[in-house]
Amino acid sequence: MLQEESDLSLIIAQIVQKLKGSNLYAQLERQAWACLQRPEIRLESLKEDIKEFFKASGWEKKLQNAVYSELNVYPLPSHPSAPPEHLKEPLVYMRKAQGSWEKRILKSLNSMCTELSIPLARKRPVGEQKELLNKWNEMGTDEPDLSLFRPVYAPKDFLEVLINLRNPNYENGDSLSFRTHLGLIQVPLKVKDIPELKECFVELGLNTGQLGIDDSTQVPPELFENEHVRIGQKVLVQQDSAAAQQYIRQGSPTALRAELWALILNISSQPEDVKLTASNDDYYFVFEDYLYQVLLCFSRDTSVLSHFAYNSASPPKSYIRGKLGLEEYAVFYPPNGVIPFHGFSMYVAPLCFLYHEPYKLYQIFREMYVRFFFRLHSISSHPSGIVSLCLLFETLLQTYLPQLFYHLREIGAQPLRISFKWMVRAFSGYLATDQLLLLWDRILGYNSLEILAVLAAAVFAFRAVNLMEVTSLAAAEAVLADLSTLKVMPLLQIFLFATVT
Image 1 (cartoon, rainbow, N blue to C red):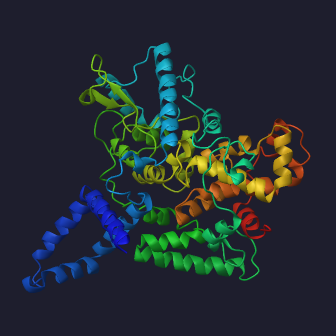
Image 2 (image 1 turned 30 degrees about the vertical axis):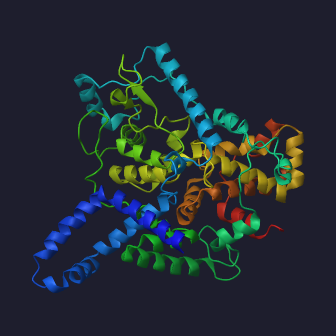
Image 3 (image 1 turned 45 degrees about the vertical axis):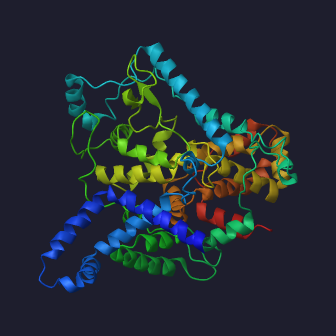
C-alpha cells in the first residue's frame, strides 16, 4: 500500500512538473486570474468556486486530457534513487547496443559529409533564406539534386544489428524456452502469447462490431456503422481523450478520424505554437508540399528533444571546433536529435490524407513520432520497441504456425527478413491507405505498437499455402511482395480469435 502511494506521488509530481512548462499551464493561470474578477466568486469558497468555473467553462476537461496524454507517454517512475538512464532503458546491454549503433550512424553521416565537403550544421546565409522562402510552395517540384547523397542507413542495416544483439548474462540461451526459439532475435524478453493478446485486444473479437469488416454474424455492417458514427460524434462533443481512445479500438469513421486522432493525441486546434524554422526565421507555414515542409521543420524542432527522456537513444552532439568534450560548446545535430533513415517520410505520408492544414499535420506527426514511431528504430526492451515486436512476430509464427516457420527457416527464408521492413515503417507504403489508417486507429486506441507484429504474423498465416511451396528467400518475398489488396481487420480477427491455442 505504501509503495503504491509512493508511486502515485511520483507520477503526480512528474506530470505536474511537465505541465508547469506547458502552454496549457499559462492559459489556466490566465483563466484563474480572470475568474477572480467575477462577482459570483466569493473569498470564503474561493477554491470550490474556481473549480466549478473550470468545470463549467471546459478547462477542467482540457486539464484532464493533458494529464491523460502524459500518462500515455511516460513510463511509470522508477525508484527515486535509480539512475536517470534507467528511465530511458533499464537493461545495460540494450543501452550499450543502442550507443554502439548511434556511433555507427554518426560515423556514416560524418563520412558522407567529408566526402561531399558539406558541413553538418551551419546557419543559412541571408540569400539562401530568401530563396527557400520564395520556393517554399514548390519544394516538391524544385527539389535539389540528391543523387550524391546516400541514406545514412536502411532498415536492413538496423535488422543486422538486432540479429547480433545478445544478453551477456545468458550463455546460448540458458532457459529451456529460450533455447527452443529458432528465430533471428536471440534476446530473452517476455512477449505475449495468443491468449494474452486476445485479452489485450478483446475489442477485436469476432462478436464485436468493427469498422473494416464487411460482414458480421451479429449486427449488419450498416447498422453498426451508423450507430458507431453517432457515438463518435458524441465523443467529440464531450472532448474526452480517454473516451476517444476507447472508442477508436473498434475503428474510426473516415469523417471523424482526423478530429478523433487529434483528441487522443491532445492536439489543440490553435496554430500559434508551430513556427517555420527552416529559413532561420519565425513564420507560420501555411503552404503545400507537406512532406518536404513537415520534415524540414521537424528536423529543426528542438521540442522533439524532450522525448529522449524516455527514449533509449540519445541525440547526437557536435562540438564547436577546438572545444571537443566541453558541454557548454555542444550542439545537437540535427537540432531535433533524430537522424532519419531510408523511408522515414512514410511516417508522415498517410497523415496527409487526414490533415489539410499544415500546422495540424505537423502537430499530429510530431506527437505520433514522440509517442510511437521512435520506438521502431531504437534498441530497447520496451514491449512496443522494435526488438520486442520482432521477437513477438517470430514467437507467434514458431508457436502457432510451426510447419511454415520451419520450412521457411530451412530454405534460408527466415520470416523476419521479410516482415522487418513492414514493422519498422508501421506498414506505411505496404497497405492500401484506408487499411493502413484502420491499423493506425488501433495503435492509438491501444496505445501500443504490438498490433504490428500480430498483423505481420497474420499476413504469413494468410499466405501460408503459397509460402509452403517456395524454395528460396526470393520466392518467399515474391509471394509477399504486394500487400495492397489485404484487408487488415479480417486478418487480425481470424489470426487472433480463430487460431487454435
